[in-house]
Structure formats: C-alpha cells, structure tokens
Length: 503
Ligand SMILES: Nc1nc2c(ncn2[C@@H]2O[C@H](COP(=O)(O)OP(=O)(O)OP(=O)(O)O)[C@@H](O)[C@H]2O)c(=O)[nH]1
Image (tube, protein in one colour):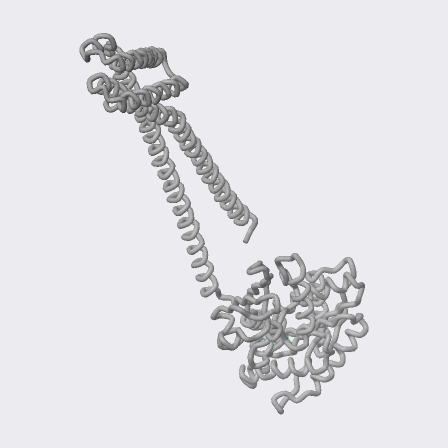
C-alpha cells in the first residue's frame, strides 16, 4: 500500500472514530438531559404530592370528626334523645376534629385556607362549650325546646368554610395533577427525541458500516482479480515460510498442483545451492521492520520447479501484518522467455556466434572494464578472402557451411575469456580482454595459419585476412577502435590477403 492510500485509510479510520465519539457524546448528553427531566418530574411529584396527600388525610379526619356521623351528628342526637352515649361520642369527635385542625394548620397554607380553618376551629370550640351547657341542662331535666334554644349554634359559616377547604384542596390536587401530566408529557417528548436520535445514529452507523464493508468487499474483489489475472506468479507465505496462498500462474511456473504447493516451504522453491542463503535472508527479513526485499537486484535470480529445473526469475517481496504475524508476498516473474529472446536477438542464426548487437555490447562493457581496472584489450577483425568465389564455385549453401566451419574453427582456438562475433557477411570479430597488441597479433597469426591449412567442405582451402588493434586508454572509444581495425584489415587485404596487419 503506498503512502497516499495508507494516509486515506488512516483518515477514514479517524473519521469513523470522530463520528463514533460524536455519537457517544450526543447520546450521553441526551441521556443526561433525559435523566435530569426524570429527576425533575420526580421532584415535582414528591414536592406536590406529599403535602396534598397529607392535606387530604387531614381533611378526611376533619370530615370524619365534624361532618356527617361526626361531632354535630352526636351533639344533636344527645340534645334530642338525651342519651349520654351521644355525649361521649360528641366529645371524642370534637377532639378528633380539633386534632385534625391543629395538624392541618401545621401545613403550608395560604391565607384563605387559614381563615377558613380558623372559622371552623372557632365553631367547633363554640360547639364544645354548648355541649357542656347542654350536658348541664339535660342533667337538670330541662325541656328539649328550651335546651335547643340555649345551645343552638349558627354553623352556616363553618359549613361554608369546610366547603371552601374541600374546594381548595380539590383545585390544588387538580393543579398538581396538571403539572405532573405536563411533566410527563415533556418526559415523553424527550423520550421520543431520544429514541429518534438513537435510531438516527444507529441508521447512520449502520449506513457507514455498510458503506465501509462494501468498500472493503470491492477492494477485496479488486485484489482477488489482480491475484488471479496477474501475469506473474504470486505466493503468500507465513512467518515460517509456509505457502498459504498461490495463484494459478504460480502453479504453472513451478508445475505444482495448488494443494501440493500449499504444503511446501518457500525455501523449497529455491535452487539447492542458494537455499541456505535464502533461508537466512528470509529469516532476517521476517525479523526486521523492513517491508520490501529483493527489489532492484542486478544479478539474475533463479527459482526451482517441481522437476528440479532452475528457472531464471525476477522477484519482489513485500510484507504485511495479519493475525499478529508478519506475512510475506512474493511476486515472481518468469524471465526464461525474455532471456531466450534477448539471447536470440544477439545470436547470429547461421553460425550461432554473437551478432553485431552482441559485439557492440560486449566491446562497450570490455572497454569500461579495461578503463576501470587499467587492463589491456585487443580486437581482431577477420575477413574471408575471395569468399565470393566460394559462393560462385560451390554455391551459397556450401558458402554457408564454410561460414559455420570458420566460426567453429575460430571459436575452438580462442580462450574462454575471448568472444567471437559475426561482424557481418564473411567478417568475424574477436574481442580479447587482458591481451596486448603483441599477443593479439600472435593469436591472429595462429588463426590465419590454422584456417589456411583447414580443409573446408572436405574439398578446398580458404584463407583469411586479419586486422588487429588494441585499446588505447583514455583515448579510444568503440568507434575509434572500429575505425582503426577497419583500416588494419584494409591494409591486410591490400598487402595481398592471407595476412595480418596491426595498427
Ligand atoms: N553463402 C553466404 N555468402 C555470404 C553471406 N554473407 C555474405 N556472403 C557473400 O560474401 C561475399 C563477399 O564478397 P566480397 O565483399 O566481394 O568479398 P570477397 O569476395 O570475400 O573478397 P575480398 O573480401 O576482397 O577478399 C559476397 O558474395 C556475399 O554474397 C552468407 O551469409 N552466406
């Protein structure tokens, strides 16, 4: 992965993290708001309901003590029936009423409520006094009408006051209920917003997940397509070098079935003589923090196929992390065809020696070597004398055979370090590194003599003319060398042929 892609991926991850953090923050904030609202609603409910419950409780006591079946009822029954049980019941009820009134007065009351309850209290106290009077009069056996006249109390205002207290409590309960309902409504609204936001964020996250997954899938498909369509062999290996994946091209290159290839260690695909070194370098690479290996190598690499044959290859190796393991991926290019083509394009098809292109390349590299290491270098240009006559007399096919035989003869008598090329037509060129002019002249003379006595086509002899020249350090180029050797050969031809000339 190049730097730009890695940067884009990091940016996307950062975006996902920021989005995630924003989502979490939004949910947390809204959750906090919701909690606050719930707490507020609870406070309101507690704040409003507790006094109201107490108020209702005292009101109940008040009605029980004062209202129907209460104090007044017993008071009136006592006066009418003169039954002492009603007297005691009236005393009890009066006390209950006064206790309820005292408790009620301790509550947080408004002015109206205080006025009403005091009015009620005064009436009850007045009734208490009248009850004592009634008790005395009954003991004195006074007439009911006379007693009634003496103990009659005007309780219209007290009844009115009680009615007011009940009405106020009802309205207060109604307002508390309304407030609670409003809060509940607000809480419900907040809940709706909260869930809308949660669902929205979930949809967003899900969308992002689907988007990222589809991106990953398309990337995976792209890599799969590259892997399978690659014109190069691709092999994935784990830390131990075990092959875990290989493409079709790899199977073709090494001539293994995929299942067999996956049982091998990558070291087994390296020619025997390089295996130990390869194993060492691979181990070093795996332990290092490097991501690329075997890049830009100048020397030819070889791989070994199933049949033990060495295949010239170019290899790039990169590493990546998977499951806490440094894996490597090798891309292997088969160089066989390229090398064959390169060799063919530099070989003379008739004589099978190097052609002029190969000659030029070799001369340039030998000049560079000589220049760098100050070594001697000579070249010999050979031309078959009157070759036209051979063609004319024996035909072109025989002429071709003669050219092949001359190449073989010359090649057989030069050193391994020397190189023979067909310069063109019936001309050959020999490059002799580490050879001075004198030695080159001797070699040329030897070749001339050998050719002269060789029987070509088992029928006739031919002769050759040779030009010799040597590389002059810091002065010569390939062009000047060719120019000089051409002149040398020309001189040899002009000297009557079958001769050597050094310039
Ligand atoms: N058979 C055959 N003949 C070739 C080939 N290449 C060049 N020739 C012939 O080589 C001959 C060269 O002739 P010339 O350049 O006149 O030279 P020459 O006859 O050798 O005479 P000198 O070099 O002057 O001694 C020509 O007849 C070419 O046709 C080849 O590949 N095969």
